[in-house]
Image 1 (cartoon, each protein chain N blue to C red):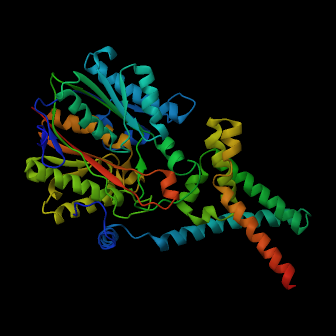
Image 2 (cartoon, one colour):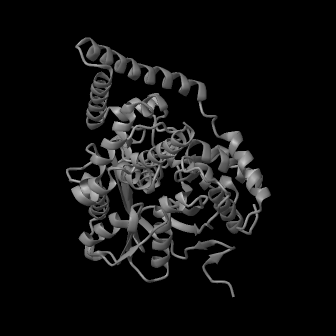
Image 3 (spheres, one colour):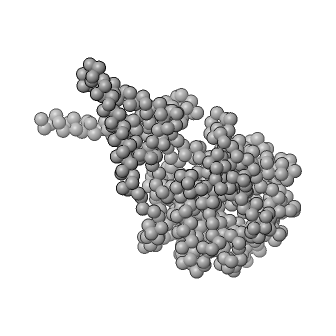
Length: 337
Length: 152
């Protein structure tokens, strides 16, 4: 027998849709210079954020975002049942080390740049499943920590191709609750890992696009909805070219989404900011979702959207061993009630 | 799209075609032009220094060493103040190939890994970027040396 809250092959629906009672976003300097400046709760201009290392700065940003989300909802740490968090660093240290300070029962997640949406999907399941009253979801990324782990020292001079993306410095936190006021999560579609043979680490958009397109298509098929049911379909960090590819792949699957399709990585910077194909990283979809998208819902600009966290599940080791790049995309439907 | 995640070579080829249609072509001519200008300016600076040291009475070997030392110092300094990566970002190979690029590749890891300490940070990762160049440069030198010994 099919699971009672599962719709189709990959989608779950929530009987009592969990409520996003508050969100918080903390962004770095470059993001603060971008078009979404006004939507962030806090902008941090010093990449070290007063700490002696970038890793500590990233952890501090994640902590700030979580504390801000709690403060906005007028809640204490003890009111939260679970904290779900993850980031890009080895052994997800930003999440683990912030959990050390939060002392909330903690489940660490790794979904690369899709972590925020993976966390929201799981958090909603915990709540609608009756296992939690409130769940705090957080992710972060930092340009400098990601750069030194995945690529080269930050001061090394090199030229990046136009398909390369810029890791967003930022952290976002979403506070989900069984009851309260705010937008609700009605569905989540868990993506499959897909690898179409792209091996170029300077072109993550092309590596992720098939997984994103597959999840969008699957979501529409599972729910029986048409793209125009949503005011917006938005991916996490496909970038300019990955977005175009995903749009085309979804079209091949019989759905036209171009008129309502956006990407957080494209929205977060101005073209003149020399970020090439756009933003990426866990922080990218996190700060855009927690800041801009929530604001659009509150202002009535959008009534409902489906957001996709997109990620590449590679490591520097897999790349050096010649493996191609697997991608993933998780979709979450958020609507104003 | 196929339900099976094991994709055939044909599907991968078809996807690569879509990607190639959408992805921008690298701006080769523009990059070559700026590499020539930036690399050329660095070489010009080196030549000016070389002439200067020769005029001050050093012989050619001494003058070349002195000019290299000044170039390396300047590149290291510019890396330290966060300027050299901008030079290479703009100039590409023009910033990487000259001796200044080598200095940049040594100083940037030294700065980067300072956070992990002097021994396991700077000490063990100083050659992250320059290491392969040194290793294979030296191996090539051996090969050339053996060749030279055998055939002359």
